[in-house]
Image (cartoon, rainbow, N blue to C red; front, top):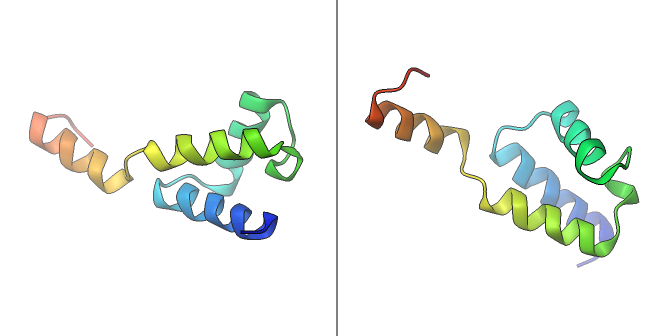
Length: 72
């Protein structure tokens, strides 16, 4: 997998969990101190991917909240 394919994979994971591009960019800036994911090291990219992959989807969060009686 090349760099751009990996970036696309990160974008897909961010979309899956409901992150906007703006939020994604802010997260990268706060977490890594970089203005863009394009400036992350290979290790940082992999760490970010693993983090995103582990996050539940927004739909799953809503289902859990509904089951425990929390408002959306």
